[in-house]
Length: 101
Image (cartoon, rainbow, N blue to C red; front, side, top):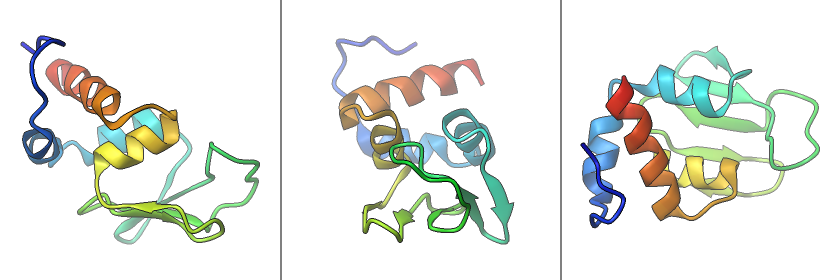
């Protein structure tokens, strides 16, 4: 079980998240649509009404908002971006979800 006072091993969080892509994407972006190897969603951090510019690669969690240029390379950065929290907080939330999966 994870203790919030423990040091976060970001690599371990990312490695553990593999295989839980669908659960994590649905949790953070419930209206995302799977298109090939990507999930496409509106960007919840801005006024975005159309699918297409915000994409997440389902295999490696690299993500980008092609309308704003915002991008990241893993599930932790995606989680932090969408929730507008630090990467430490994002990793903690992901750990908590994965413990219940």
